[in-house]
Length: 176
Image (tube, rainbow, N blue to C red; front, side, top):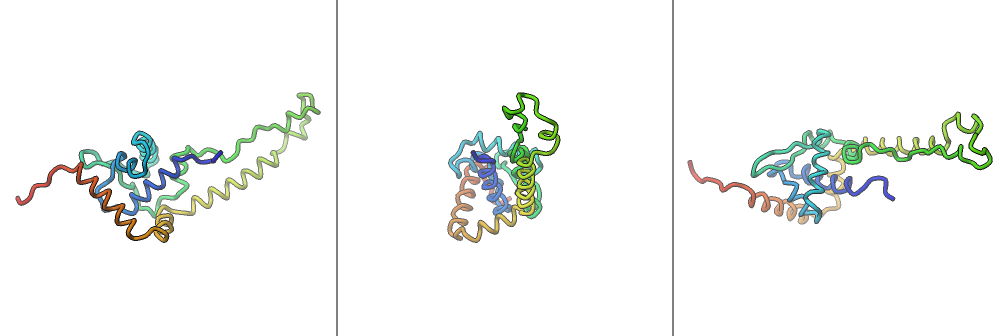
């Protein structure tokens, strides 16, 4: 079982699009969902959490959608993970060491009075993982993805979202 669900993966992909195209018409949840082949309801739930965490802001109206609430260099991957997953711990110790049949339901204090060594190891690992995620910004992730994504794909993505924005934009007046 994965520690973090698909919400982190989809959420980060959505935010990377927003960070890469900050000057474009804000995409709607429906457009972001269709682009990734997932449910618009699912993306809307992700963006509700991201907005509540202060990572995105919504723009209302026909041309409404979402934008990053702050510069991408100021958003850590950990902030996104915590917004979408609720800061769940890596490991939840169940204190099973006291369940040994040899203790007949009454473990001695020496067994349960100290921190479980397995739990301590898992806490150390979690702290290191969270440190890595906290040290990486959306900007750094965007640059890393950009190193492997062909320029044609970036342009095709932008063109697709621009075309979608035009279909939901009101007709523009020419001249005044």
